[in-house]
Image 1 (cartoon, rainbow, N blue to C red):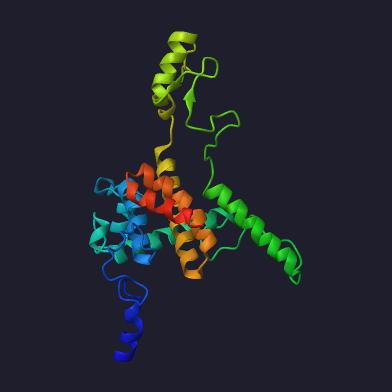
Image 2: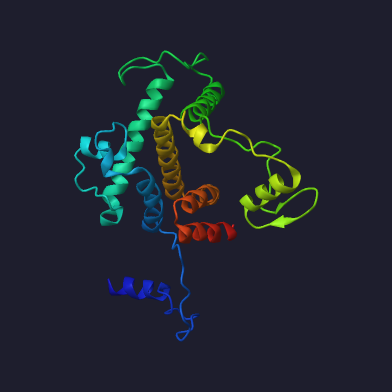
Length: 262
């Protein structure tokens, strides 16, 4: 045991032969270990989708927590990271199974698939591989990224807010809109955001956001398990957006710093 401790001791910051003992350690936002990432990912899901007021709303996280009697899962995920992580894994598996049943036209897990069946030769490995890839792509497009809005080709591609004719520059978007309306007679579309949101399916929006975040989290956990650094870097870009809108600027900055070292 003493030999092991002596061998690992030089890896402690400030204790190796190449380190300066008087040098002040550099503060790191994200250490890159599993627990740090779990602390970063859980707040996004908890702060946006976990609420004790949704006890009677079937399909919500808190209702699922009560259904499986997960008493070690509390309102504050910091109280027990591992219980919260295990709970999210169970919810992710449940949604994955239900989505698979719908995708293959099955009513129960014992039922036989009725849709998206494999019709190739049983001994053709290449055809089987192509079927699996195609089926997974269709499954993700239908149940995960369905109805995700995309920017049109004519949308702005930078944050440089200026009028294209007079080249007058602004800092805030509403100032540019006021300039367009007052100086150039351009009025915004009549359909406001509040009018559009009146017809929204809030149950679908909640479920879709939950599924996206759960799959993103599971993908990242799998990338860590397999040591797939390239996939982790790609996922950091998605996490950065979710951290930004979830008011976690330090985590967003940590993702940017991680991508910088690509």
